[in-house]
Length: 499
Ligand code: NAD
Image (cartoon, rainbow, N blue to C red; front, side):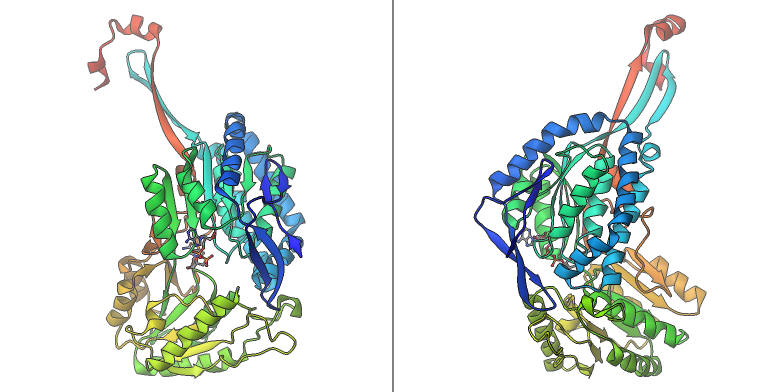
């Protein structure tokens, strides 16, 4: 049995808490490794090391820090296949999906190469006689991040690359379900030139999360995961005086108007609803066709597509559409929600409950499910399923459709499929959701825009990556300076002159 480690002060370090979590191969159901779950003392040790290393790193000029990112990006390209292989083996997603996971993190590292531009301050010459005023963006110190299982490469990189290029030290507490890739990333950052102690990985569970939330040296906490935990982390982190941003769960609606290209809409729903087994926070989980005729046409297009989806292990090749879900508990949760949908009166038009794969009977595979005639009172509509289950809610009108999306507690992403510019524009302007697609099913903003939902999908003010990341990982200091020569020229210094 492989025993995984933490990554502390530039090396892999065994856990000493005596507590471990199981890391599964989701395709076979076997335990392939155990991951140490850190004690508070182990976490606090990493914080001390980070605090000692950070001032020197914060003093390195931004261009040199950016060069580390440049090299890191090269190394990610070099090791892409290796990273994707490790990622798929712990997460279960297909090999192309795993490469996409690394790629979307890499793009934020690329964006961070622009740090010298992003970190420039502001300067006002002669704000008063002999007085100049300038502001600078300084690192916070030691920052922490807690990440979910579903993007074990991308989301850690969304956090640590901007944090580090801004001059901070960063401690990552990745998901205990798939913890190997973050350690490989930390090693690559050091191969790229990052000093030891600036990026550390402490594996663990609530114990290490609570250690992060209460350690007074930790200045900021970033979190991505489910909404109940996001709420807890935001509340506790803020109460402990930290800067906190938390990104939570989702229930993303796609509205299909009667004039939509129905093949395009059906393809988009299949890709976004079932890709990565539905384990994406930007997955479309609710299709909302407008009008009975649109719904009938959409279902007719969807059924054969959903039935054709190929489910299998990532090792079976690139034509697999999606792999297993992450744990047996996740599988049971999905299947019990499917049962609740049937019990509450939804129509299961594609039934994946009996899905089984020869040779992988103990794997955590769930077949694709498609529900029609779902209503807003049903659990499958209210709850995030996070599995390959697409619900169709038939709306009588555009107003009813937009109302559904607006009244749902989550507000991560949404999409509309239509050929009508007015409707699309109205939707984009009125909807109370953070990321909107027009004929685009998964509207994930690129690295130089910011990523974030609204409502119960987010807690905090600033989004991830893009310019917001440079705001989140720095604080502004404004200096007002007066030099005697200016006073001589301007006479006696008078603060009124600044008005
Ligand atoms: P999760 O909330 O179970 O776990 C996320 C992190 O929190 C992990 O590191 C975990 O160890 C830690 N954690 C779990 N329970 C905890 C507790 N009681 N106290 C403190 N820490 C705890 O989420 P997950 O299952 O890993 O990921 C799936 C969820 O993440 C979904 O809800 C999905 O929508 C969401 N997600 C959101 C976004 C976004 O940007 N909004 C992106 C990806 C995933």
